[in-house]
Image 1 (cartoon, rainbow, N blue to C red):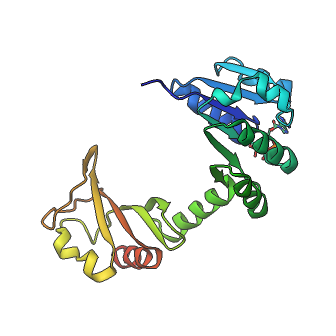
Image 2 (cartoon, rainbow, N blue to C red):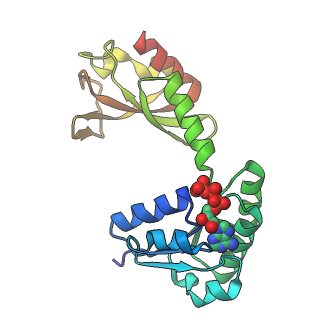
Length: 220
Ligand code: ATP
């Protein structure tokens, strides 16, 4: 299968980090910024780095952006430029358009234009940190809906040595243990008689309130 090709427009801290990570993973990346110095900084790292104004339709056409599988618009401060560039790219028929939003309102406009995925890096990182501060045993989480998440939870001392059946997580908290990670081994079909060891990580799905209650219960 052909590897997807990516274009990243706006090489601030966020955009350049996306471009670098994709290039590091061996993907073809076209990096674009209006600022020649930003372009220069990435020229050795990505496949192509080009200075261009993303609000210039002709410029975007001549770069052949519609042929890229995914285009990321990572312009934040200049909301007008972000919206214009997204509109042009959507009109050009880019298969998947991802754009970074600076605020909820900015994000709403991007959605209305038809941007396929709107991301809020600062808001999401802030929420992530808050979750970690509230629940120190939670390593990471994925929001499924405003009320439901999947969390990666470090097994507490109260869990260690006990079988899933004994922990009774489903009946007690209404949450479901989807997987148990022990070192590098991943058990994705956990059974009632599987025993939790110290240092294991549980992947649990449930309502946010129930997950928090469960985390509090086992960390006490
Ligand atoms: P970050 O938080 O990722 O550092 P930011 O949200 O502060 O970024 P900006 O600094 O506003 O975002 O923009 C990121 C980059 O987008 C900058 O390098 C800027 O030169 C570039 N940029 C802004 N407008 C355009 C445009 N019309 N065409 C191309 N690049 C642009």
